[in-house]
Amino acid sequence: MLFKIEHLTHQYSDGTIALNDISLEFDRGDRIALLGTNGSGKTTLLNHLNGILKPTSGTIYCEDKPLGYSSKALLELRRRVGFVFQDPNDQLFAPTVKQDVAFGPLNLGMSQEQVKSIVADALQTVGMSDFAEKPPHFLSLGQKKRVALAGVLAMQPEVIIMDEPTSNLDPRATSEILHLLLQLNKEKGITLLLATHDVDMVPLFANKLFILKKGVLMSEGKPKELFSNTELIREVYLRSPRIAHLFEVLKKENNLPIADDYPLTISEARKEILRLLDAVKNVS
Amino acid sequence: MSHSDLYAEVDRSAYTNALAKSSPITKTFFALSALVLCVAAPTFVPTFIVPILIFILCTILILGIAKVNPRLYLNLLIYPTLMLVLSCIFLALFFGTGDPITQISLPWTTWSIYKSGILMSVHTFFRVEGALSCLFFLVLTTSITDLSLILRRIHVPKVLLEISLLIYRYIFVFLEVTEQMSTAQLMRLGKGGWLKRIRGLALLAGNLFIRSLEQAERTFTAMNARGYDGNIRVLEDFPQPNKMMLILIALFNVLLILVIYTLYLTNFGVL
Image (cartoon, rainbow over all chains, first blue to last red; front, side, top):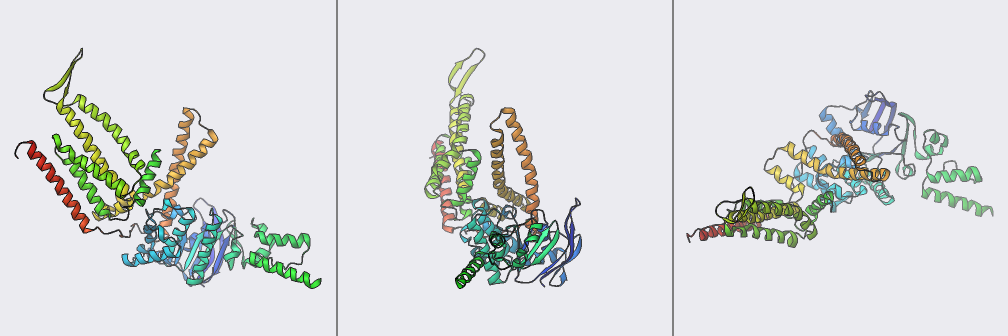
C-alpha cells in the first residue's frame, strides 16, 4: 500500500477533535474522493499526508514506513506528495508564474538549467506556457488553479492532493481541471486524492470514496456502492448526484424497473435508459 | 484614474509594453545614467538643454518604442508637474542673490526678484522633468521581477528583496479584498455622513489587518508544503543585455558629457 493510516486522531490546540480514530489505506494510481460537509475534517486529514500537521495519536505509513518529521524526511515526503491548496492566492506567492512554478524544484536542490526545463514542461502540461512571464494577479481563478497545479507538478510528485479543486470555478474551468487530473493519473500514474463536497463531480473521476462526518470515517468503497446507500448519504448531510437522484425517484415514485445501483453519470444513465427502452420494446 | 488604478496600470505596462522582453540591465543602465547626467549637469545658462534632451529621448522611448499608453504617461507626469510648477514659482519669486531685476516696496519690507532666482527655477523645472522621465521610463518598461533580479545581482540583502517581493505580490490580493469589503460596506450603509465613513474605514482597516495575518499563515503553510526552508530561491532567467546597446548608451552618455563640457567652456570664455 502506498499510504496506510492507522487510528489517526488529531486534536487542535483549542481542544476541537478534528479527526477521530481514522484508519484507511490507498494504493498507487488510485483516484480517491474524500467526501464530507464543511468542517468534517477533510482538510485536516489531507494536511497530515504531506506532513503539514502531525497526528495527535496514531500513525501514518508511506510504503510501510511510518512518516518521519525531520526536515530531510519532510522534504522527501513533500516532493512525493504534492498539495494544491483551495485558494490559489495562498499558494502563488512569487511575482511571476514562472518563478512560482520554479519554487518547488529549486527547493529540491535542482540546478537552474534543470529547473528551467521542468518549469517549461509543467506549464505546458497545464496549458499555461503563454503566461510564464505574467504575474499571478493578471490571471483568472481557473488559470491560477492551473498554475498552482503546475507548481506541484514541477516537483514530480507521485501523489497529488487537491483541496476543493473545483470550488468557485465556472463549468468550463471545472471540466478542464478534471480532465487534466485524469490525464495525469492515466499517463503518469499519479495518485489523486481530492477533497470535495461536489457530489456530481465525484463519479466522474473517483474509483474510491471515503466519507467523513465530524472527524469520523463513516464509510469507504466504490462510488456506486456508497451512492446507492441513500440512507448513509443522507446521514452524512450530503446528497446523491442529481442523476442518481432522478433514477431513485423514477424507481420509487413511478415504479420503473431500475437496477439497484443507480447510474451516477450521464453515460451510465444513457445506458440504463436504453436498457429500459429495449425492455419496453421487447414487451410490446 | 484613481490612485490604485494608476498603480495597477503602471504594473500592467511594465509586463506588457513592447520593451518588456528586452534586457533589464540595458534599461536600468540607460535610465540610471541618464538620471545621473540630468541631476549632475552644472547649473548655468544653456545646460538645461541636457535635461530637455533627456526628457525628449525618454518620452520617445516610452511612447514610441515601448508603446506605453500616452494617457498613462500623461497621468503619471501631471501630478508631480503641478507640484513642480508651484515650487518653481516660489523659487523664482523668493530666491536668488545679486542685483534684483525689480523691486516692489511693501509697507514692512522691500520684495526683490532676482535673475539668479528665475534661472534657478527654470533649471530646477527641467532637471526634475528630465529625472522624472528617466524614472518613468524604468518603471513603465521594467517589471518588479526583473528589477529584483538586478538588485539580487548587485547583492542587495536577500531579506529585503524577499520581503519586498512578497509585499508586491500581496498588494494586489489585498487591493481586491479591500475593494470587495468597501463595496460591501457601501451596499449596506450607503454613503453615510462623515463620521459613518470614518467608522467604516476603521472597520475596513481592522479587518484587513486580521485578514493579512491569516493570509500570511496560509501562505507560509503553502510554502512549507513545497519544501520552503527559509530561503526563497529564484530562477535567474532574464534576457541577457545586448553588448551593442550597452556600448551605444555609454557613447550617448559620453556625448552628453561632451555637450555639457563644451557649453561650459563657451560660457566661461575659454574657447
